[in-house]
Length: 416
Ligand code: NIG
Ligand code: FE
Image (cartoon, rainbow, N blue to C red):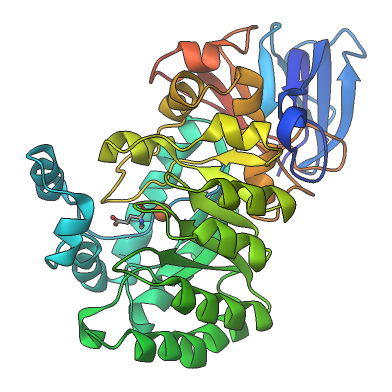
């Protein structure tokens, strides 16, 4: 945590401490020749540049001339699976040859392959692999990330994944805050073949209370999909989690239109994620119940699936977030630049909407809109400084990084 004054910046930010919905998503505050002051990691002043500063370290502050470039809130990647072992390049090649994601999974590959590799890891190797991903994310401007368990599917390794995330989040010099989600219901482990009811019982009776007691995750998620966990199983698990005080997230309607978005509305989940095949009723349900619709266009791209109906969701009054879904299977990418591109090119987001989706609405999707996601007094001093004074470079740099520096709670890191 540091004290910093960034002056001569062009601030570009959504405003608020809750998600922005529908038309609000394109309303950004833009202040030329602006300054932010961060004291002890927290934003203390936002406004016009107040003085003639010079660069350097003095008066207990770092002074930094932004030279008119755009200063945005740090990006919030609100859906990732960055703690795992192994890679699945061979599976990717099989998909290139025409096999589908679900057929690979149904034949014992997919998530099960990563479970095997993840169970084989010791804590330190798991942690260092995950730390490498955080470093890569930070270079693309991410200052807060959500990470899920779900590659253990047993007590020991699920807990280890969550403990890795806790340990990364407790690092004093961390560049990225980590918010943890329990995704024990990511797939049915082979030990429970044809016994999904018993597996859900195990999650409800053993895992959720233990995770709550040790405070290892804030949210509970489920892969609600045909051939994985049904609507009824998802409802049972998520309702039990809610009773214990977990906030809810759902992998919804990724492969077929099963009704996960409607379930998210019914249970007042924080977010429903993926939504490639969500029905009109699902869109209504999310808009009416203030569920953040979290879209993961990199996954649609990598699976050659149609993109989610992001434009219609925004026009229907939903709060839409964008995230990467970084994982070793369906989407081995944490690319923020490409996420901007796909959202703007294929889902017809305006650049302003995409910025809100990757900042304030991402924060809302993990219940952090009070503390991050916009440049406002009292929030964390988490920013990205672009190379340009024009924020439209975000989708224009196709798959290329336009982040020059990342500021995490007042500590500045140059990206190079
Ligand atoms: O969000 N859909 C389920 N879970 C991940 C993929 C996990 C994997 O393939 O390892 C997803 O796409
Ligand atoms: Fe996912």
